Image 1: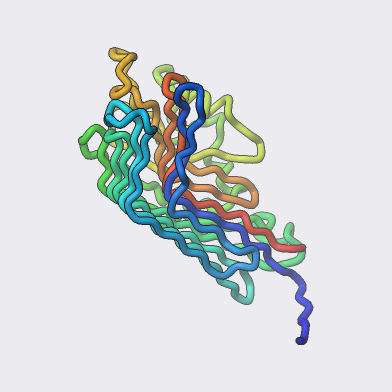
Image 2 (image 1 turned 30 degrees about the vertical axis):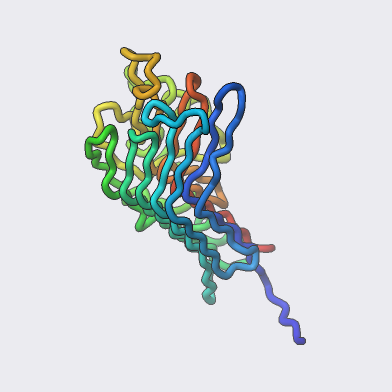
Length: 285
């Protein structure tokens, strides 16, 4: 069989998942199965995952909403690649239907759409933005979001997608100057968990931000909603923790988008995410 030498090859890498995480109970870490996942071959091609109705709760907490409960009606995950004369392209489409977190946060449908474009060229520094991939979240969206049975409008800010590379994104989303995107509109009244995201849990290699422009909820801070109640600290049904919408972590060669992430805090330790996709393929050389 003949062999055709090429100037460059591309090592594809992308994954998708519907939901998953962990919960701590009685000094045990309980894994929440990750469902609806898909992973791409390093050679590219296509990957597809799907799951139907999924429900999970600790075996000794059968009484939601007082106990933890996670459910989805359906998940589809689709990854596929393309190659043109000038670029390698990776696509992700993750859809989570009927998301339900402890009967307090419900999302009819969340869609995660990522498209990564790596330009071909041996001299990466001579390419636009130093050859960093252009990764777009165009098409990502939330439908029918309810918190405590009240509808909540969550807008996606398409303006942020005008900065598809890390070098461009860092110019608009900085820890020194909080914006509506990340980690959001700090003030004296901002809760400690948001101040920590903005000033403590940071890295020079990664930028944390969100595709969300605005959340129509009275306890929204940046792209999060605080689901705790200081007036009833011992009632687990009123103290779920925090939930984050449209959170992205962006590096020079990667972008990770979780349509939803939850942090249960210290009293009821645990966390997880849903509607996630990540891509960080790399050209060689």
